[in-house]
Length: 240
Image 1 (cartoon, rainbow, N blue to C red):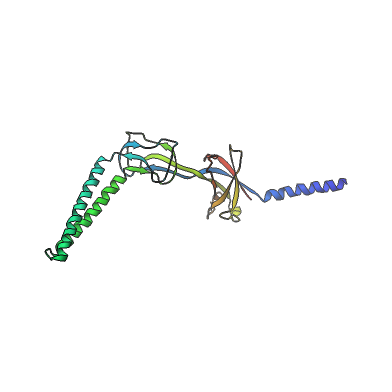
Image 2 (cartoon, one colour):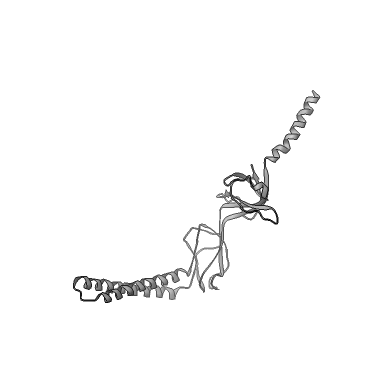
C-alpha cells in the first residue's frame, strides 16, 4: 500500500511542471484605451473653460475656447458677401436666360465671384472653428495645463484627455513564444492592487521581434467600464 501512495505522489509531482508549462505569464503595465494631449493650431487667449479636471465629456463637446471676437465678425462679413453674390448671380442668370440682357462673360464673372465668396466664407468658418478645443472622443479630462486668461502658442499642450472605459495590458514576450499566439486569444490579467482578475483578448502581436532583447511586444484589450482598474499599474497576463 505504501508503494501505491509513493507512486501517486511521484505522479502528482511530475504533473505539476506539465500543468505550469501550459500557461505563460507575462509581466507588463496597464494603459488607457485612448490617451491624448490636445492643443490649438493657433495662438490666442483662453477665455472659456467648459469642464474641470476629472469630469467626463463626450465626443464633439467644446472643452476650451480661445478669444474669437475678430473671427466671429469676419465670418459674419464673409457670409453677407456670399449671400449678396448669390443674389447677384441669380438675377444675372435670369436676365441671361430670359432676355439675353447680359452677356455670357458677365454671367461667368458673377459665377466666379460667388464661388470665391463661398470659399472665403469657408476659410473664415474654419479659422473660427480652430479657436475651440473639441473632444475627439468620449473620456475623462485628466489634466488642464493652462487656466482662464492664459495665452497659448500654436500646438502648446492645453489639456489631457483619456478613455479608461477600456484598457490595454502591454508587455513583452520571448519572440519564439510569440509564434504560437493569435489575435483574439483569451487571456487573464492580474492587476496590482486589485483583488479580482479581469478577462481580455490579445489585440496586438508585434510583427517584428526586437533584435537586441529578443522580445516581441504584445497588447491585450480588456473592459474597464466599472473603473476598477486604474491604468498605469503593473500587471501580469496569463496566457491559457
